[in-house]
Length: 171
Image (cartoon, rainbow, N blue to C red; front, side, top):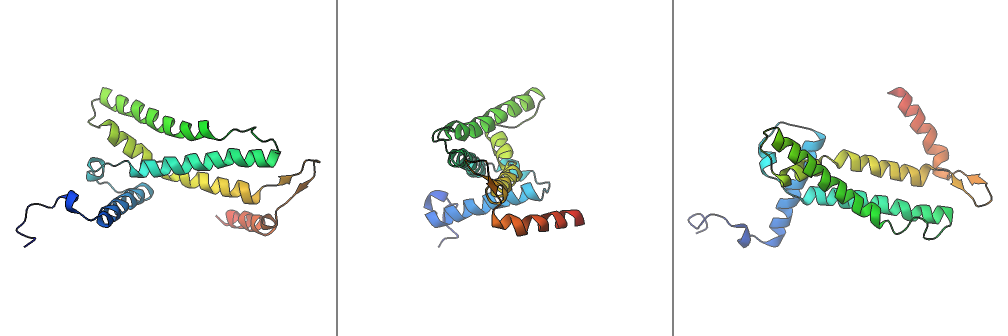
């Protein structure tokens, strides 16, 4: 009988259940970043999945930006492989978390380093969304400059950009 057995241990849990439990927890924390609700238990239930996903997502977008610059300007190797930009995202998040944790400790707070990384990492979600929107806009709505100085406007810009301006005026 399962009810009379020892307390549930995650080591006995199927892998699929573990993954879905973690995905739901990450989704809940993303939801709390977008729609904040005061819930102190979230700080105690820290994890590093969300910060890892967001840092990797942002670093990948920044790396692909460098690769596209090489392609647009025709200078192979001018922007590098994006390695420093990729690493900079992780270093900034970890160093920022260290500074915030140190400041909190000096002010008498009770937060661990990994709780700080978790909170700051999840708070990168709006920045990651903005980065994706800017990247999409840069790629799809920008002018294409040729090597002879001529430029062309991509077709989607001709019908999307005026609508964006009209909608922005309504708000």
